[in-house]
Image (cartoon, rainbow, N blue to C red):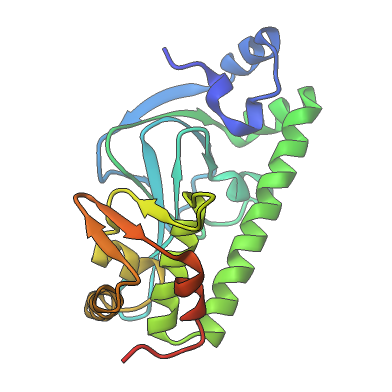
Length: 226
C-alpha cells in the first residue's frame, strides 16, 4: 500500500501523524481517462494523488478542451471546493491508472487543525496556484499563439535544463496536448514545431525533444515565427 507520506502537503508528518491522517481517508483507484472531478459539480472531497497522475481541464464556450495543469504523484486537487464550499472550478481526469486518497471537507479540516504543518503546506499550494494562474493570464493576454507555444516549450525545457545550456524533454510533447495547454490549435503547434526544427532550435532524438541552446529558444519569444 502506498504511504500517505508521498503527498506533498503531508511530507513533514511523522509516522504517528500519518497514521492519524490515514484514519480520515478513503482510498480509490480510477482508470485512465476517468473523470475524478466534474466541473461545476457540487462534490467537495479533496484528492491526494498516490500513484498515476491527473489532468485539470476546463472548456471554452465553443467546447474546446483547455488543459490548465497536469499533476503527478504527491499532488493534491479539490481543496478549493473543500475550503469555500463553492462548485468545482474545473474537471479533473485520470492520466493512466491513478490511486487517490480522498478526504471529506470535514476530514480535511480536521487534518489541518490537528497538524499545523499541513495547513502551512496547503497555503503554499494555494500560492502556487495563484502564481501559475497569473502567469497563464499574462501569457494569453500578451503573447500570440506562436509565442505561447514557444513559451510552453521553453518552460518544459527549463525543468530539465542541463548546466551546459541544453535540455532534453522526454517524451516529445503531444501536439494536441500542448495546444490544449496554451489555448491554440494542434495545427498551430505543428507549424511552430516545424519552423523550430527547420531552424535547428529543436531536434527530435528518438522519443525526446532536444534543445541544443536554451538561450536561442528564449530569444525567439517576442518574435513571430513565419
